[in-house]
Amino acid sequence: MSFLFEMRRYLPAKSNPFKRKMAGSRLKMFRLPMTFLIFTIHQCKRVRFFFSVVFVALIFLFSFCTACRGEEYWRQQRGSEAGVASVIYNGNTMLREWHFKGKGKRRYEQGITVWASPVIAVVDDVPMAFIGGCDNILYALDLADKSVRWAKMTNGSIQDAPVIGEVNGMKIVFWCSSDRFVYAHIAANGERLWTREMIQPTKTQGTAHMPSPLFHGGILYVTFFVYDKAVPSYAQKSFLAALNAETGRLLWQEEIDNGPLSAPIGAEIDGRFFVFIAARKGVLRAYAVDEKKVEGIWQVQMPHEVMASPAIETNSHSPRLFLGSKFGDLIAFDARTGKKLWHKMTGNWVDNNACVSKVNGENVVFVGSHDYSLYALRTSDGFVMWKKSLGGEVYSAPCVFRNRQNLYVAAACLDNHLYVLDAVSGKIETAYFTGEPVWDKISKGENLWGSPAAVETRNGAFLVHGSYNGYVYVLPVEGETSLRAKARNSLSLWISLAAAGIFFALFAIPIVLIWPNKHENSKEQR
Image 1 (cartoon, rainbow, N blue to C red):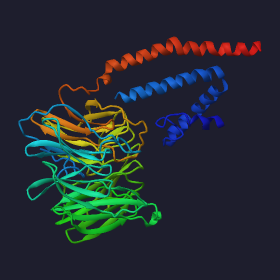
Image 2 (image 1 turned 180 degrees about the horizontal axis):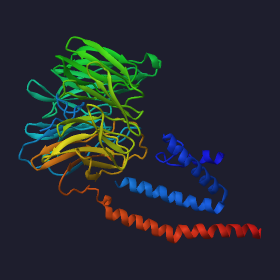
Image 3 (image 1 turned 120 degrees about the horizontal axis):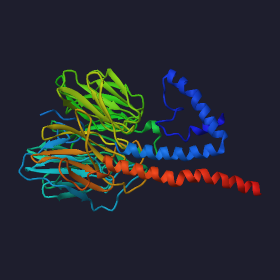
Image 4 (image 1 turned 90 degrees about the vertical axis):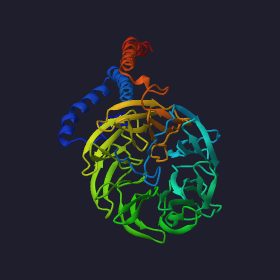
């Protein structure tokens, strides 16, 4: 029976009976027939060879078929002080499809993609996107005339989205770089307002982990961590700091943990401003902050490591936080007390942010998982309103937006596609092929992969997405586009399946029937 333990290594994860948690009755029902079938296959050479070919064919076909299948918007670290990822542009200029590729030569670090998430803002009546990446440059892209308004070089990769805030009547873009600096530049022309080094360098330090900052009330909140080789793991330090948004002056700094931290997420609760931070090792903390001090309110332990920032529901009398983990769960917490409200499991890692939006009068939280699915859950009780299987691991944070009068949600997957789904039903409306990665070693569990954002215009919505093939795409939701996933229509699917069937009927099966006889005859002649 040792053969049974060998077989489980070759079964796909989703169908592996040794790994799936099955109900007791179902497991007993299938255990004996499956054992007999596998034992029979093991004993008969010809049958074993035939089933091996069929097994490979089924894996091929299964993989192919899987790959072919005035509301409030979500809050997280991207965008304005309100924390929105989608903006409305009411100007007369019509946007057009655009594929932008940066000029920097540096394209990849291990586990990090080319582009972080974009921030979109209307600056001087012009829609602009601000995005950085591993080429160490922050680009200000004019979406109206498809040009680079300005670009600023840093000394490290830009791992997360910037944030836009208003200081003295001017829109300022703030961003962090792995060179340990925080940057503040005027959004319209790129003129430097200030820079601030958060950590003094040493010879034993690595690159800094500095996610998106948070802007509120003239204060910029920043989390940062730098691993120092000369210091043991338990003595490493990570911090939350508050900076004056006009001058960059350090107001205060608080030690939080001894490892990487998520981007800070904020909300006004009971007259105080709360900041929520998730540590990589799975601790979620809440702080009450102002210009002078920081006060710890509560902290809870997640079941596993956390790669994302929490998402918050603010249009409710009882605001909730939502956070996923590498254990595959999504947990809702009371933002005031940290009490766990509900707990739902997905089939694999949840390693990027969720998002919250109102759909048909109900607050809904959207989250992607590495089980190839996008989920929509009711925020009040965690009821799954819909679940949609896509063509690959959902690595991006979802983005909710309007096109005309309809509400949609966009998410990117590791099958090199960007999907647009109906936010009410989960139906796939369209998909874009955003290109294969320029580096073939894609690793799971990175929250640094870029997420889409949207611009809602008079001529329909446009998605802005930094893909890991080195391009920033500006794509129309309706109308023709060069990246529309035409290969995913049903006709091409059936043609491909028919071609595969003909191949196995004419070549694979005859080989299975003829080759064993020749092999046995050659043994007899010897």
